[in-house]
Image (cartoon, rainbow, N blue to C red; front, top):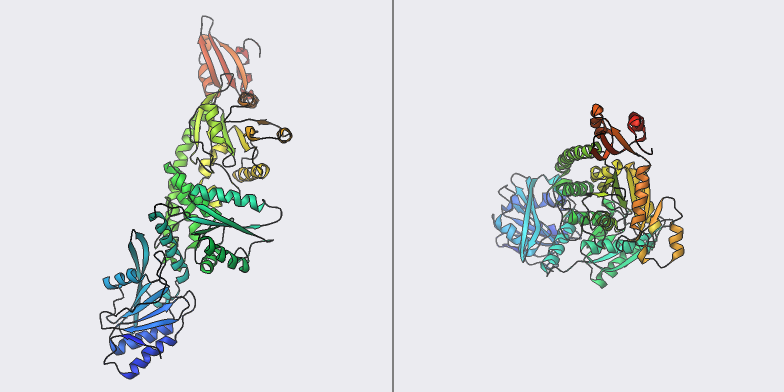
Amino acid sequence: MPEVYGETSGIKKTIIDNLEQLYEYTVPFGQTITNELAVAMAAVTQSLNREIAVYINRRGNVVQVAVGDIKTVSLPETDGRRALHRLSGIRCIHTHPGGDSQLSNVDMASLKDMRFDIMAAIGIKEGLQEISFGFISGQIADNYEVQSVGPLSLADFVQIDLIYLTSQIERLLESTNVVSNDNQPEKALLVGIERQGEWDVADSLNELAQLAQTAGAEVAGSVWQKRSRPDAAFYVGRGKVQEIGLIRQELGVDVIIFDDELSPAQQRNLEQALGIKVIDRSALILDIFAQRARSHEGKLQVELAQLKYNLPRLGGQGLVLSRLGGGIGTRGPGETKLEVDRRRIRAKINDIEKEIENLKTHRSLHRERRQASKIPTIALVGYTNAGKSSLLNKLTAAEVLAEDKLFATLDPTTRRTKLPSGKEVLITDTVGFIQKLPHQLIAAFRGTLEEVVQADLLLHVIDASHPQFEKQSFAVYNVLKELGADAKPVITVFNKIDKLDSEYALERMLRQEGSVAISAIEGINIDTLLGMIENSITATSVDVKLMIPYDDSGVMARLYNGATVISADYSEEGIAVVASMPPEYFERYRKYVVGDE
C-alpha cells in the first residue's frame, strides 16, 4: 500500500485515500505535470488547507506523496541520482494554499539541497491560480545558484520541455564541474557518417578532432556509420545511438561532438537518449571563434552568429533555458544562458546587426580612402591553417600570430609593403575557411569578408602537404562563390612545399595556370611570388615617366586623384613624375610622356 509522508495525524480516512490515489497518476515523458494531477492536488489542498507535495521521477511516475501544514511541507529523502554534477532525477511539485505561487526561501534551499530537476509551487485559492518553478542555474565551487520562473498559467507550465531543460542544466553542471576541477579538459567523443562522394570520413573526423583540441577538449575516440543520408531523428541509426551510449560509458566522455550541423530536434533526441551534452560542428566552430575574437567587431560578429544559431533551439516557449553553455565549456561573448525568449533574441540580433552596419560604414570610409590613394589591394584567402598569416608575416613583417592551429587568427589584418619595382601594395589577411562553415558565420562576417570582394587580386593559399588539399581548395571556392568574389584575379599559392616528399605531386600542382609553390616559413620562392604579384598588378595598370611643365602644374592634382604617383622630382625643365595608372587614363597624359612608353 503506498505511504503518505508528513503530518498525517488527524486527517480523515477519505482524504488519506485521496492522497494515496495521487500515486496512480502518471505524467507523459518530458512533461512537467498533467492537468488531471494538478486538479486532484488542488482539490485535496482545499479540503485540508495544507500544503501537499508529489515527487515525480523522469519516467512520469509519482514516487512519493507528502502533506504538511499551511506554510510548509516536510520533504522526504528521495532515491534519485546524487552525483555532484547530476540532478536527482526527481521533480517536486507542491501546493501553496494561500494562493501565492512564489517559491519561498525554504523551497529554494530544498531545491539546492535535494538537487531536484525542478521545484514547482501551485498557488491554490478557489481552484488553481498560478504556478512558479525554480531550477539550479549554475555552480560556484560547492554552492549552487538557482533561478525562478513565473508565475505562469497551468497551460504554459504543462508545455515546458522538461527533458530539454534538465539536460541543459546538467550540461552546465558538468561544464562548471570540469572548470572547477583543476581546469581539466572535457573528454569528447566524435561521431560522423560516411557518405558517398563526400570527404573521407576519417579525414573529416581528424579535422573535427583538431577543432575540438583547438577549443580545449581532449578527444577520447571517434565512431562513424556508413549511411546514404543522416537519420531525421538521431542523425545516426538508433542502434548506433545505443552503441555510442556504451562507448560513452566505457570512455567516460563529457561531451559528444557530431561532424555535421544537427537540427534542434536531433540534438534534443540525442541528449535525451544519451543523457550527455551533445554539440555539433557548427557549435564547435562558433565556440572557437568566441575564444579567438579580439576586436570589438569580431566579438559582435561571433555573438550575432551564436544568437542566430541558438534562436531555433529555444525550448519551453522561451520561458526557460535556451542554451546553457555554447560549445566546449561555457565561454564566449555570444553565449546566452537563462530566460531569453525569441522576441528578445530577435531584438538583440537586430541591435547587433545595426551596430555591425555602422562599423561597416566606417570601414567603407577607410576603404574609400585606400582606393582614392590608388594603392592596389591584395587579399589572402584559403583554408584554415593553410599558412596565410605566415605568408603575411613573410611579405610584410607584420608579426601577426601564426600557429599550427585551426583558426589561429580571426580578426583581419592589413599591412603595406613594396614590390621589387618599388610599387606599394596593401595585403589583407582574412579569416580562414573550412568545410561545412556555419552559414551564420558567413552571414555575420560578410562585412569583414568584403575586403575579399573589394580586393584587386586574391592570393589563394593552399596547404600543399595536406592529403585533402584539393577538397579544401574546392571548399574555399564555394565560399568565394557565395561572397560573389569567384571572378576575381587569383594567384594560387601552394604553401608548405618543405613538407612535400614527392616531386611529381609538386609538378602536378603547378600544372594549374597562375600557380606558384612556396614555403612561407622557409622563405622558398617568395621572390617568384612577388614577381607574379607585380605582373598581375601591372597587367591592370601602366607605368609611365612624365615631364610636366610648370605652366601645367595643375595636372599634378588630377594625376594624384586618378593614378599612383611613385615619385615626383622638381627640376629646371619641369616636374619629372613616375606614375602608375589604369590604361584608360594613359591617353590623357600621352603628351607629357618622356622616354620609353
